[in-house]
Figure 1 (cartoon, rainbow, N blue to C red):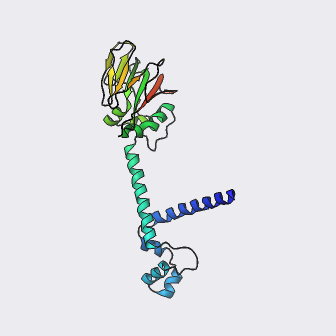
Figure 2: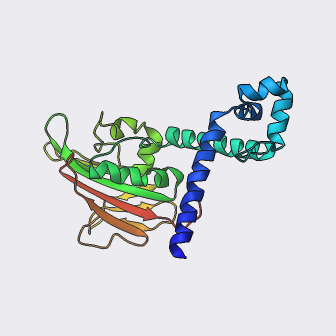
Figure 3: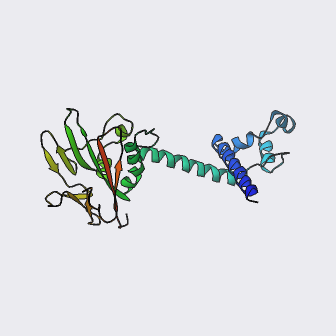
Length: 242
């Protein structure tokens, strides 16, 4: 019985996929009806409009013809899905990209949530800048997503590196250190236990000390990457509704 049910479901899915292809192939219902009409039909009927009416009424020897209402309903659904996919590809910089590095894949997995406000992630990166100087810093991912185009990062044209304008920045050679507040976090640099970040939405403290707990509703993930010396992502889920 289980195999029979699975087979039935599979056949139903294949039929649905084939029907979706038919729906997208024809712009209007009349074109769909015309696909059922052959030269022999027109030879005997001699009226294309009448031939379409006969097809719509179901006077065919084989095959099930969609009614106009069902065709138009499915057509509208297919168009809505197409527009939704198109909108998502425009919104998400990672959409459609072939991401081979773990770090870029991790950013792509979090992009939608950080854009929508479901999550606010802080990215720690340690690497070398274009001058060969070692730098490190904490980046408010959601803030950077809103303030710049991330397509070059996901396509491999640019490397994501911390800046003096990010949450925190440190140049190990020049010893230049900065900390800044962003739209999502307040940087607490003057703290005896180390650097802390307070989420402005729920006022929860995020602790980036690797030996301590990151805090309520926060999670630390170390990423192994071929692109950077060190990568860590801190994800914070707010309890407040967006």
